[in-house]
Length: 214
Length: 101
Image 1 (cartoon, each protein chain N blue to C red):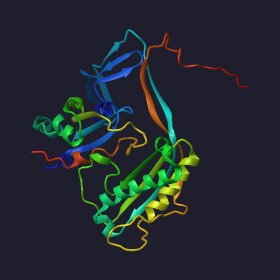
Image 2 (image 1 turned 120 degrees about the vertical axis):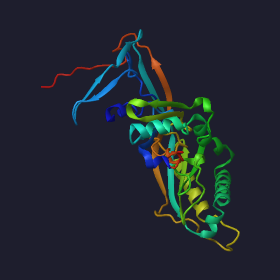
Image 3 (image 1 turned 135 degrees about the vertical axis):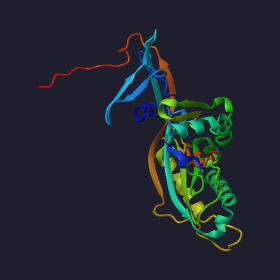
Image 4 (image 1 turned 135 degrees about the horizontal axis):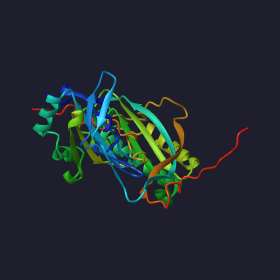
């Protein structure tokens, strides 16, 4: 049973294992325990494909990132957290446009992840209750590290003092664990290619260089 | 009864960068058959919970491992700049407390 369950891992089906030269079918596979440590597997079949295929995945540079980690503890802010954060994000975008000009819009992306609310599942999170504090992760992605860092510095200043109506005067609404608050994350990549290649020969795509080591 | 009480393992993981796959491995054969036949883990429940069309939800009852496998398209591509979970390992939360009759 534990051997059979291995077919589940990171596969969309346990019945078909697709390999370059064919498909291993486990539909009729039988798993018999011979002892506590040994298993006999029989009945799986291999269908050879007409064409030899190679899975080709590719990634591209998505941009350079800068992040800020912070925490919010004020119950007054937490009670109106969604509207406070929406206002904060809008204020940050407006500040960036004011400082860097109109044409900055297509040169960066700004995301906020909220730990303690929906950091793992994002908008799919069905749970609505929150605890006594929330963690924030601000993220800017831009074409260069210099720009990402400059934009994040702007976000950091704007966000930390973003007000709520209940308090008058300048507030410091986010606890930053670091100074400077922003952290350069470097280059970030994303998948952009998911193909099945039919090479002329099985080795065509794999260059082999031989070296003699004395 | 909640699903976690009768499962050996509930997990989620990428099956390639564009898919998310969930495995529910039950404690024993009898429990597996009960859950399988109750049909509460179905395309409609997944579509509602993960905001998808039911047609894109694949469900496989895997008798050999007393397991149910569910595969859906990833809401965001693994590692993309708005992805929250690069390995897809923490997307099974709503399944854990699913009520099994």
